[in-house]
Image 1 (tube, helix red, strand yellow):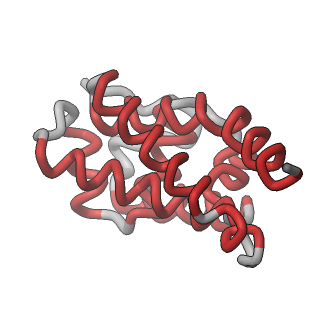
Image 2 (cartoon, rainbow, N blue to C red):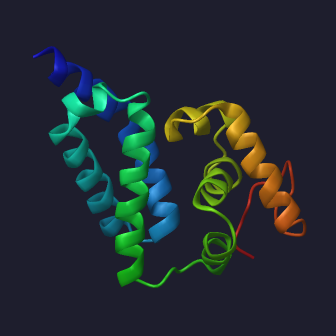
Length: 145
């Protein structure tokens, strides 16, 4: 019973944020909803194991990213900017850009969602800026041009 309440709270808090990320990556509401639900079903099935891990949020984030990538392989990315980011940057860097620059999450919230320290997100954003200085301004949101 307590495990179910813990999962319910986790899902309620993260479902909307996961949906924003999935929608940004997949550009289709139906696919993004399916990805989020598949991720949460997987998390629910593994909840006891997840609770024994050092960072359950990081484990679930990895599952969400895998689900998005699987769906993305079947549907070409509608956003060439994001496609380029994920081709040229490590996933954690590209995810940090999507969360902080595309979706406007504060660094601390993006870090919490991905299950990493805020300094890891800041480092990922700095690496992305070095790779794409013309694209990723420290202050401006990332938009498809």
